[in-house]
Image (cartoon, rainbow, N blue to C red; front, top):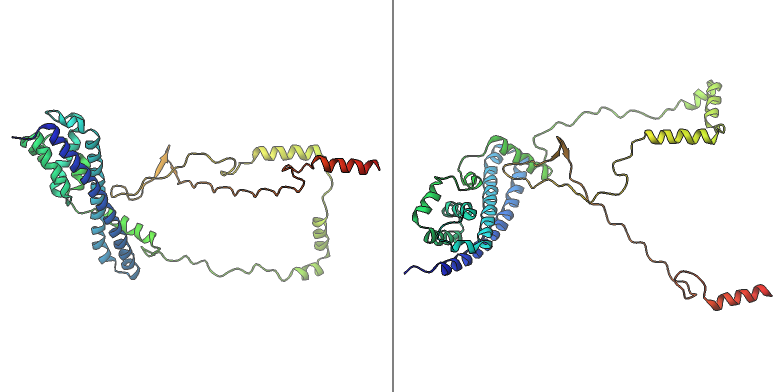
Length: 310
């Protein structure tokens, strides 16, 4: 006798929680391994073994694609767990169809055993024909991202070069090799003939004295008007005034977008830095008179008045 719908949904919920925990653990493991592999790629680029780095970097790309796939499947598992009540219906709810079919499609092609258990329970719930349609993706309900992440096509040349450039930039490796610009000799900015010129040309010394002399006094109203006019023409610096609470940060790089950018009206926005916290000034020490504001107490005032009367 097949289990009731409520019992089956309870089993699915348990396996979904286990699958979410396993997916997060695998993602952390893959991230740690990816850091080691990137460091090894930087060493290969540093010693000039570019061909070897181009081949090995494909493993890093494949690992990043698997991590992105696990993130998508984790979201689908959380969605099914949040809408577990809809699984009790005799047919698959349209709001869950993409998540259910994506998990059924991807479970046999991943290393997560808990997803295979979820797939078995979903097949028991919705039937064999439903599973076959999901595996073949006849109706196109499986997520396009999941299908793309599970494809075995080799990465494009642009993606490989982009990965190598980002790894070299992160670890400070000069790749591709860029020739250092020739700035030439340092010019001699010291003029040793100043004293000789002053001796030979006395008028030059007089001009220098005139420049060093204080300027003639001008009308303060005219100078103030000119200052206001210059101030109205001046452009304030970008960091003038209080900083806005909005901080723009680009999304994390992925295999689909190795160099993410944030644009507004075809203008690229740079990541904004949070303003540093202002240092709190120390509180002034309280006067010995007893009042924190520095006002002397009544006895001290009375003593002062008595001294003035004398």
